[in-house]
Amino acid sequence: MEKLLAILRETLNEQMLRATVSGRRHGEIADKIKLRPVKLRGELCFQGTVSDGKREFHTNYHKEELLKQLQAWLLEDYKQLQMDTTQESVQALVNRKGKATIRRTKMLVKRQAAVASHNRKKEYVLKEGTVVPFLVDLGVMTQDGKIVHARYDKFRQINRFLEFIEDILPELERGRELTLIDFGCGKSYLTFAMYYYLKILQGYDIRVIGLDLKEDVIEHCNELAKKYGYEKLEFLVGDIASYEGVDRVDMVVTLHACDTATDYALQKAVEWGAGVILSVPCCQHELNGQMHSELMQPVIKYGLIKERMAALLTDAFRADVLENCGYRVQVLEFIDMEHTPKNILIRAVKKHGRSGDNKELRSQEMKRCMEVWGVDPLLQRLLSK
Image (tube, rainbow, N blue to C red; front, side):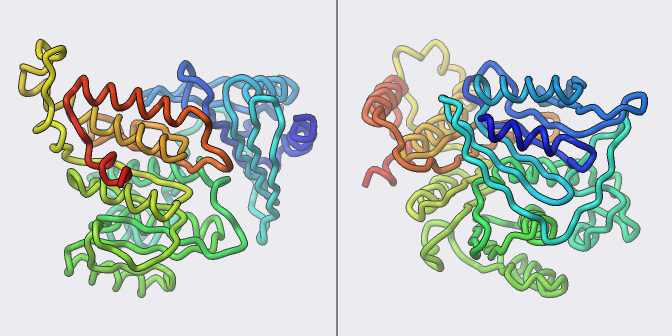
């Protein structure tokens, strides 16, 4: 921990661009804390931002205050730190005993620093005013970099998705080609965004495959990828359950794959040993047809309540199954409910080393819970074979 604090003392200056503290150790805190340098009455300070999903809350720190706060956060509440400066990226993982594993990566091209004023608009990963070609062709942005008013929700959704990827950058290796697959990519707004962010902005060596059943959509996406010169971005016509085109995958994305298509995508991800899984499920019908429980009958006798409970249980059991397969799992709000009811994102990051000695206990607890509800989820059946 002392080495990490020394690095932070060195890098907390005007050359710092941003930092994120994440990987919470318990459930009574924000999912993550974002930090950035700001000028307050001409003095360099650092602003911490947390969100409850609808509002943002800000706290300003002087350097010594922030160093003490970072030490407390990383020893008690969080386990991961990602910091970007104009010259390098610093990634740290801190265990419960305070031992820090640190990785520092020099930037090939020095980035421009710009300390913000105290009051500002929300800063997005893809910035308004900077022309992004695929956003122009997809109708989200104008030729001069302005966001089309009617597509602002889509712009926010794309940036929200990239924030989830930003949080897991320490899990993605540099120095080798990484393979990423997007199952059910559709029009591929987020597939293009993922490639642009990781390849163009972050400099990762990646190969991205988008998979969907709609031939005309796949053809159009391939034309766009060729137009932008995205050599390692390809789109294929194919089914999630039967796809066998690769042997190793580093990250699997499945957004709005309908009903049990999500389960087949998660099965593939686990069998490949994917280091990162990002899944936004859709249309969870399977358990609604199975669910029967005398104990819960006063609740599930109402059709609408039963349908919503079944959808939540489906995703909860998916998260539990992934945990039992050796992943750290979070269930997060993807986008505000006012924009879409499909707002749950399951983010799973593969644990390094042993997955723990309580796997059997977790399995028994999960089995008892399934028996209470009278359900047998597909993902559990797929991965227990």
